[in-house]
Image 1 (cartoon, rainbow, N blue to C red):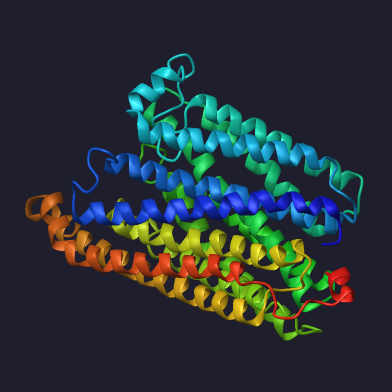
Image 2: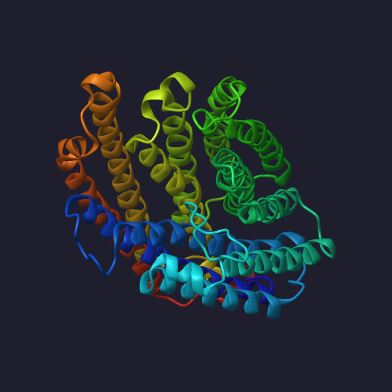
Length: 467
């Protein structure tokens, strides 16, 4: 750790991992409820478990991105963080707000939660992924503004690098597009039109800038390749991501009442969306071939390389499978969407979060890397989680095909009913649940690897100083 203020990243990483565990627990509950409909009912109804699962996903990734930013920005800017105290305060406020919101979902009916939080005065609740009470949304906005201000002030007084510029651009975009969470028009078409400005333009727009910046930072540090080479790749990837991602929003506008031209715009630009992820794969492996040194943290390198491959498969290949309008006509609303979402989020964002934690956590504790034993466990956890997520994705794809075959292809006259179709998919759901438990085991191994992280021999003072 070169700068004392990088320690601000510690609580963010710790909270992120705790929330990640919670997300997987509720994912397993959901997988069980698909099979046993009254599992944990009425204590945790399906709609509540689904809200908690998806909200925890978003919040833990935001904590991980913030922790990554607090770690890498001082090192890139070559200066201490503008206000470490502000960083710690915002972490506490965000954690308390997040926990209270989740407890609200679990302990009171959603309509009661809306009533006691004054939703009638400024209604924003009731929309998928944006279920948070208005007061929580305001809290998130304030935390993000304070966070961006802290980072921007740090960058302004320090060295300006491409990594920092791309990162702060993504973070500002994250804050700007979150504002559309407060826009709730009466028209359902207009509501969904701008709802995607949060949901899509976060994960397929500005989050990709954050992903690219973190990946570039890790590769610079672990390969020793010239910064100029990495920056050229980063410019190309980000340009492709923004061009395809912004207009690719149109693939959500096919069947919601938007003008017909979105059928063409959405199809054409969504077909381009796999390219930036393919470039990321080429980028990562090209940097590995050109590396000037063997970094001892092989686990972090494994996560970084795995991130590019899994992101290309999840966000690229599985996204392309059902993004063209003539195909989406049959696939829309099936489990194929869930297959794409699971693999894309894990590959693009969960894996880069675990990569930066794998790289930064030992350095935050005065070590160049974790012990060989810990790294073996961690690398195995990467493989187990990746294989389990691929299994979940393939099984959900199979389930989606069964839905298409039974409900969509026969036409209205010969289509099977929804519940009959679900019965026909039940064996797939059982296998998906088993794969989910495999993923949970992999996550447990990842966390365990940090408990046995310390090397059997003490690192030399020279190594600690270099770290």
